[in-house]
Amino acid sequence: MKGSEQGEKRGGEEKVRAIDSRLLKCYGDRPWSPRFPSLLDGLVHTILSQNTSDVNSHRAFDELKKRFPEWEEAASSPVDGVEAAIRSGGISRVKAERIKAILGMLRARSGSFSLEFLGDMEASEALAYLLDLPGVGRKTAAVLLLFQLGYPFFPVDTHILRVGKRLGLMPAKATPERAHDIMDEAVPDDIKFRLHINLIEHGRRVCKARKPLCSKCCLKEICPRIGIEPVEA
Ligand code: SF4
Image (cartoon, rainbow, N blue to C red; front, side, top):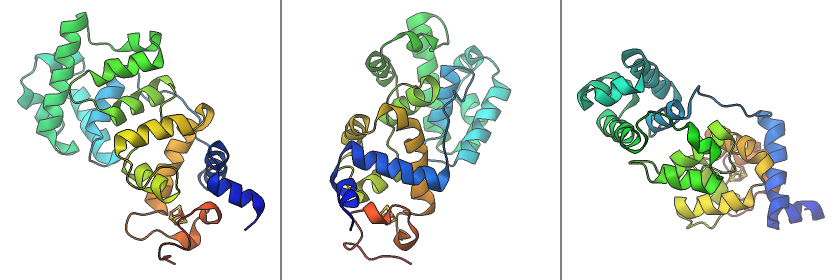
């Protein structure tokens, strides 16, 4: 192994940047731009994306907006109406109750259905505000703040947790909460968005849960798992 590769296996920022530059060559750049017209749209969409595919969550969100063009209408609807609208997104009762609870809390706190004021807050303050909303956990809050506002958080989903552990970016027993702290700190802000998306892509296509395709992996030269775990051709 070359000296620089040894450093990439051990190092902190050096290693993270090496992973990023290799994934960049594999999957391309991911220029940042907000995905939704409002932060509340983004939050509701993120909740709908929990435990389902992108296709299903997009469909559920579109149907929800079709039935309730204004958030006030969803807030005033019985939970059954919201549930029916988002049924295609899976675990619709739980998600409908979460969405209703969030809308109710926003109305009670500010009398409006907007989260745009988060853009005027410090990143840590905005994170704390979101974590105080019903059903909003660390991943959901980090996704919203990174994707909609470009705040320096690194959301950790199931793919990133798995790939990050295999790459030695976090301890094998790190909890999702601890993994968020580690990745927020370890990943330089200028590559947080791109690396988040590319690590998920890599987890889906190559570093799969059951049979990682190590022999075809663009990270194999710097992955500490090579030589420890069986390699799937
Ligand atoms: S070498 Fe294997 S374990 Fe390491 S990142 Fe690639 S696919 Fe995952």
